[in-house]
Image (cartoon, rainbow, N blue to C red):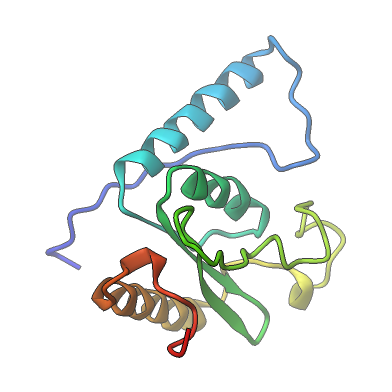
Length: 156
């Protein structure tokens, strides 16, 4: 997309359940990376979460809610996908989130799983379709008078 104004940023944050020893070099790197992610969320209006694991979407989801930013998750399965927005902190009737409705806490979703049970972005055609629907969802939300606080249903 030649007209896109974008910058690629690579961040590495350990998965939940992978402790980092306080005072270690990895601890400092992790704290710096979390601060960088927090700054990125604060600086932007919308956070799109198309990452390779469900665990990597957890922290940006929490930060988006903390900073009242619109977050859109795109999750790919083996033959399915999910596109959803997370509710705004100022919404009167809060929407659910990707993790609040899940029966399992964020763990390592790539360990000891068959390919169809892993949450990974390895389906090239499906990733483009799901991402396009995420952009369409945001376009619809931005057209609503309440923007990110728009209700989930039209009759609400």
